[in-house]
Length: 284
Image (tube, rainbow, N blue to C red; front, side):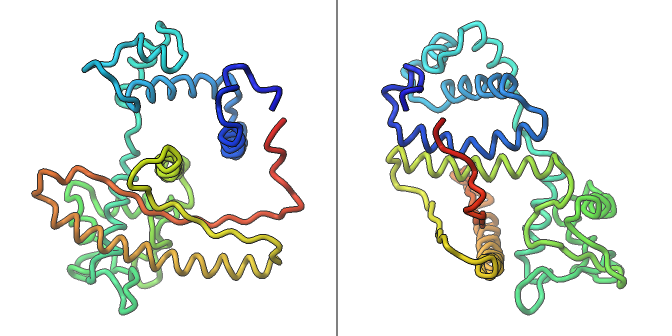
């Protein structure tokens, strides 16, 4: 750790090692899309300014650029510019907002489920399936969007397929596009942000702590990993569907309550790696 900049000397070494490790896959992703270190540094500068402006206790009613500069280490002129440019960012793609609502209802309401409570194939038109049709499903979420337009976009993204009986089938029991970088990138940012935010809350001794657990084993054969992957996927789908059903019920109950201002995220993941092909050293 002798090579660390002087500014890091008061930072717990274990925290720096953890941050270096979590940055590794992010660096690989960014470089794969042509984002080099200077571009990343500019992005990180903006994030530091935003965090200093919004995430720290402050005495004054409106936090000043000078205070943000002091907390973040970014020059005050840059703080002023970056705070002005940040307005309006972070909105999800329209396809994600609408698609997530449609899939949530498809996975939660009994009329759209099979006897095993899984999302069933839906007749494309109301003339074919009545209220339990894809057309009625979309109209129940947004009457201003043509169901055919939603279907065409989902077919492009790989979210749904159309079978020989003109029924729409959901490819996954969650909105995870097979194609479409914009949509996948949105969920990448949302899911990892919330996971990291939960872990950060716990690391800072936030109370009550958030659920943030994992199971990890090594010395496994490829066949064993594949068996665990399959089991994890099956259990995850069941759990996600149950959480989705209950969340939709509670959201409908809370519709007229002024205190209904909270949001939540529940997620699961699975990862495996050949230990003979390490990610690389955690320290230089």
